[in-house]
Image (cartoon, rainbow, N blue to C red; front, side, top):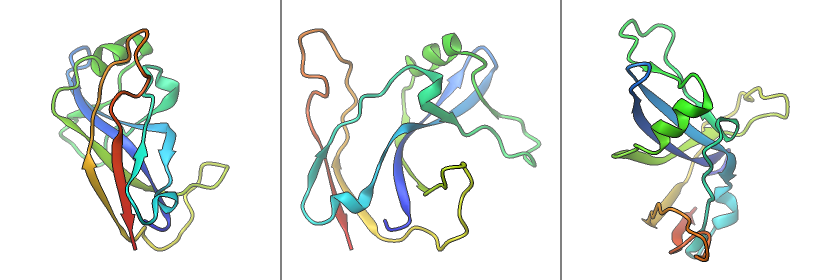
Length: 138
């Protein structure tokens, strides 16, 4: 996974704008290079703040107009509460501090994920619940 980072992703339907929305949790990307070798537990505290997520929007040339972004934090929270099927991880290129993406080779390598668990946090319960196991390979 050299040259990239892993971010949690989901797709859901925003009933307010009648479109599918795709969001990546860009507040805390996973650096795969730190996971070399053995399996490692990785825990992410997902938030419901739009400031911590990046809407992937729509392709400007796609005339179907089926993708969009939630217009505000209230709508985003409703969408996040109703994610049913489409979750996973995406690899994105590392960015420069100014937000631009350097022209480099595509990220390369592989990553084995043995389990993904998404669970709510309740008072008095360990914040991340059961561990997630990831292992990066050369």
